[in-house]
Amino acid sequence: MGDAKTSQEMQRWQAVLRPILLGGMIVLISLSHYLTPLTYCHLHDIFQRLYYIPIILAAFWFGLWGGLGCSLLVSVIYIPHIMYQWGGTFMFEIERYLEIVMYNVVGGLTGLLTQRDRLQRHELQRTAAGLAASYHTLQGQSERIMAVEEQLRRSERLSTLGEMAAVLAHEIRNPLSSIRGTAEILLDDYRPGSPKHEFVEIQIKEADRLNRVVEDFLRLARQQQPAELQRCHVREELETIVTLTANEARRRGVALRLTPIEADLLVTADGEKLRQAFLNIILNALQATPQNGSVSIGLRQQGQQCEIRISDTGPGISDELKQRIFEPFFTTKPDGTGLGLAITRKIIEAHGGSLQVEGKPGSGTTMLVSLPLESSD
Image (cartoon, rainbow, N blue to C red; front, side):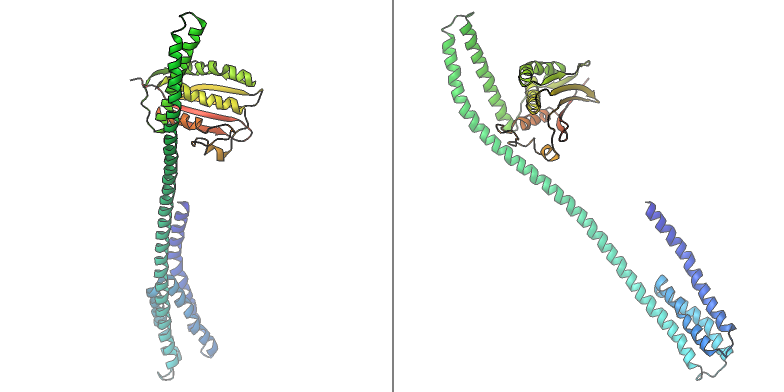
C-alpha cells in the first residue's frame, strides 16, 4: 500500500515538472535564437536542431498530442525568427520552413509510436495480470485436487482396512465362539466359589470383551460408530488408565505421572472408546520412552475444550513422521500393525475432538487431545 502511494506521488510530481521542464527548454532555445547575432550561422543551425529535444521528450512523455502540441508551439515561436530576423525571400529560406515541417512530422510520428507502444505495454500488463490470476487460480485448484487425491488414497486404504477387518472378524469370531461355548460347558462342572469357577467366568468375560473389540474395530474400519454417549469425567477416565498401565510402566522402568487435576471436566462421550483411545496413546508413549525416562499426563480447560497432554521423554519425532503416524498400517515398530493411532484419531474425531502431535527429534513427543466440554445448557 505504501509503494502504491509513493508511485502516485511521483506521478503527480512528474505531471507538474515535465511541462515546466519542456517550457523552460523551449524558452531557453528561443532566447538563444533571438539574441544570437545572425553572423553566427553555425550557432543558429545548432539552436534550430536543439528544438527536437523538447519535441521528442514531449512525445515520449505525453504521446501523440503531446508531440504535436510541442512541435506546433515550437513552430509558432520559430516562424517569426525566420520572417523578421532573417528577412529573406521564401525560396531563400525554404530550408528553414521545411525544418518547421520536420518538427511537426517528428513530433507526430514519435508521439504516435510512443502512444502505440504505451497501449501495447498496458495490454501486455493486463495480459500478465490475467495470467498471474489464472496461475493462482490453477495453483489453488491443483492444491485442492491434490487434497482430494490424498483423501481418495486415504479412503482407499480405509476401504482395504474394512475388507481386511471383515475377514479378520470372521476368522476371530469362529474360534472365539468355540472358546466361549467350551467355557460355558466347563462352568457347569464347577460350583460358585470354586477358584476354577472364577477362572472360567473370567474366560467368558474376556471372550465377550474380545468380541466387542472385534466389533468395534469392524465399525471403525467401516466408518460406522453408533456409540452410546453419556457424561464422562475425564479425570476418572485418566486415573483408570494410569492404574491399568502402572505395571507396564514399572516393568519398563518409566515414571508414569498424572499431574494434579483440580477441575472436574466433563465431556459427552462413549467411555469405553475414550479409554481405548487414551490407552493406545499412553502405551505408545511408554514404548517410546527409554528406561529411567518419564511419561506425564496433564489435563486443563482451554476455552470450551478439554485438553489432555500426554508427553514422553523419548527420542522425539520428525516433521515427516508427524504427517504419517496417523495413516493406517504405517508403523515404525518391527512388530507393530500401524492401526493404533489411526483408530485412536478416529475415536477422538468421532467425539468432535482432535488429535495432534507435537515435538521434534531429541526433545520428546507430546500427543494433544482436544475434546469439546459438555454443554451447560
